[in-house]
Image (spheres, rainbow, N blue to C red):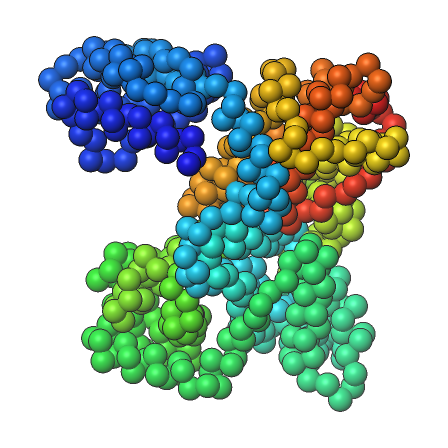
Length: 545
C-alpha cells in the first residue's frame, strides 16, 4: 500500500474513534520545509465546525488518537499552526520507494491508468502551409508533443494531429507570391515577402502549379524541422479534404436543423451569441465563400467521432476563437467540455540581447530550423518547456547554446551523464551490484540521499498533476530540482573507493539506479535525449571515484 493511503487510513480510524467521519477526500501535503515533517493534513481545520471545536484543539485530539494506533511508517506527530497535523515518518518508507522505482523501471515507474484507455486527439502547430515554421511555432510544437507524452504515460490513447489549413485567402496569396517570383515580377504588396519565397520559386518546375507545388514544399519543410525536434504526427488532416468530402455541406444542414444558424444579408450566420459569444459569426459569406469558421466546425465534429477528448494548442491570436468554436459544438448537442483549448503566449527571441522580430510576410522570419540548428533539438525543446505557456517567454539564443550550468538542459543532462560515467567506472574496476533483496538500504542516512529519495517519490505525483493540468513545465521544474539534488549529492557523497564501506557503496549504487530512472522518465516526457557521455572540462567530478 502507498504510504499516503496508509496515513489516510490512520486518519480515518482516528476520526472514527473521535465520533467523526470524513466524507470528502482527506488531503495530505508535503511541507515545503522537511523539518516540518514528511506529510501534513489540514483535516482538523476542515472538521472543526462540525466537531464544535477549535481547529487547534481538534488537531491535538486527532494527534492523540493517531498515536494510539499502530503504524509501520509514522515515527512521531506534531500539531502545528492553527491546526495542522504533521507526520514524521521512518526512513523505511523512502527505501520502499527506491525499491519500487527500481523494480518498476523506466517503463512503469510514475505511470498510471488515469486515462483508462480513453481516446484523446492532441491537435497542435496546425500552421498554414505557406512557408517554413518560425521560432514562435516551436513553443506550441514542443508543448503539444510533451502533453501527448504525459497523457500517454497517464493511460490515454493519444493521437497527435496537424490540421493543414490548405485553402483560402492565405494560400492564394502564397501561390501568387511564388508565381510572381517565378515570372520575375514584383510580389503583390499583401503577399509573402520572405527570402524563402525566392528560393522556393527557383525550384518550381515549369509544368507545376505554384499552389500545389508550394503547399507540398511547405509541408515537407515543416515535417523536416518537426522531425528534427523529435516530433512525429499520427495524421496530417487537410482542410481541402473536408471540402471535397461534402462534410461541410452536411455541417451546414445540421446547424440549420438544430436552429443554430440563420440567413441575413445573403450570408449564413452562426447563433453564437446564444452560447456566450459577443456577436454572431458568419459561416458562409454573401458570395458563397466559406469563412474559416465553417470548415473548422466540420473538422471538430469529425474529431468528436474519433475521440472522447479533444485538446487544441492554439496561438495567442486565436484566443477569441475559442468561444465561437465551443458554441458551435454545443449547438449541435455535444458537451463543450470535450474540447479543451490551450493558448500559447508569444515568444520573444533574442540574439546578443536584441529582440528578433518574426514575420513571414516582411522577410524578417527566423525559421525554427535555424533555432534548432544553432542550439540543438534538446536545448530548444527544454527551453520552450521551461515556463507555463500562459506567460510570455524570452528565448535567449546565446544562453541556450552554451554548455554551462546556467543552461538548464545542460545541467540536467550532465546529471544523467555523471551517473552513467560512475557506472562505467564501476564496471571497469569490477564492481558487482548485489541483488535488490541483499542491499542494506539502511546505509542511506545522509541528508543528500534522503532528499533524492523524497524527490523520486514526488515524480508520480508531478506526472499526475502535469497530466491533469496539461502543464509540461511542471516536469521541467521537477527535473531541474532533481538534477540539482543529484549534483549536491555528488558534492558531499562518494560512491566508489577503497575507503568506502562496501555496504554503503552498494546502497548508493542502487540509489543512483533509481535516480537514473527518474531522470530518464522526466527527459522522455519532455522529448529530450539522455546522453551517456558529455564533454565537460569546467567541472571536477567529485563523487565519481
